Amino acid sequence: MTTRVWDYLPEYEKERAEILDAVETVFRSGQLVLGASVRGFEEEFAAYLGTAHCAGVDNGTNAVKLGLQALGVGQGDEVITVSNTAAPTVVAIDSTGARAVFVDVREDDFLMDTSQVEAAITPATTCLLPVHLYGQCVDMAPLRALADRRGLAVLEDCAQAHGAEHHGAKAGTLGDVAAFSFYPTKVLGAYGDGGAVVTDDAETDAALRRLRYYGMAERYYTVGTPAHNSRLDEVHAEILRRKLTRLDTYIADRRRVARRYAEGLGDTGLRLPTTAPGNTHVHYVYVVRHPRRDDIVERLKAYDIHLNISYPWPVHTMTGFAHLGRGRGSLPVTERLAGEIFSLPMYPSLPFDVQDRVIDALREVLSTL
Ligand SMILES: *Cc1c(COP(=O)(O)O)cnc(C)c1O
Image 1: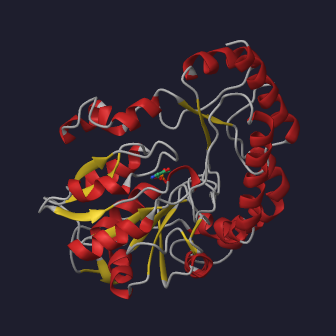
Image 2: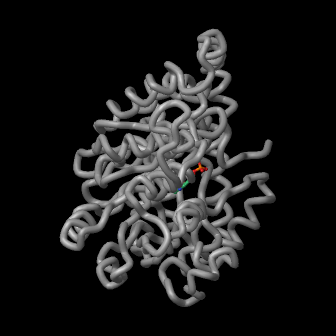
């Protein structure tokens, strides 16, 4: 039996009636685009997070892109972020015409090293873009203080941190604007693509609604560009509404899986994830670290266990981002990590027997390295 790092089918089997009812609800609603389901989901997701506004968009990459544009970020601007992230974070920055500037990450939790940010600020810097990677938040207080002192905007990339808390506040409420993805693997996932941008500021929200809808302030009247067609799909919005009522349960299940890994692998020499002070972890992925990562991943294939690496190539080392001018050697922690991390199967409905197979196989492989 092949063990996959992520599998939505056990969850679909459990929730099938409700998912199909969500589809039927939209198909019978009489409004297939920007209807009651998108509006309802926007209100319910904003309420869940504790933000004033939420605008549904078509995916997480465009959530980051439109979020930046709503903040006025564009050509000639610099946005400070990390290279240890999913490439779409940087694709989104690039697509606004702004330039991504990278700082390194911390050794303990692989998140933005906020102590490096001030030195990266130039007169062109307009925005700080922390990525709440793997399921927990970047240390936000120093970023907020720096942004206020230097007049910068803060956009949180929350694509991996739905429901994660930082000193009691949810990811998505800690900056000026926050971007979410509902790609199926995410902590809150649709049955296809989806995204959202949240903010407390009414004008920013109005800008987002124009940006996603041809730049129109009202029907058939475009008031400006940049503009896009980046709407959240009505079917996925209705599915997300149903799943949102269970988000805290999904997170509790992910934590249970994480605890089981910690119990089963705590004494093996693998470096297990840590949770930074003030954070709750939602374990979007369960990232472990070992200097002989490649050997371990190779040997596990004999057990038919396929692991993921998030991420094997730091963004700044990819040819597609060579124009950013940051070669190998410029971000030592990020580069070292990329050669040593790998992710174990993690999803809320991961069966115990499957997880035990992974733990047993890893223990065997690690004991014979
Ligand atoms: C998934 C992800 C995105 C992109 O989301 P899509 O919905 O796939 O476009 C952006 N940033 C991070 C950190 C992600 O994990």
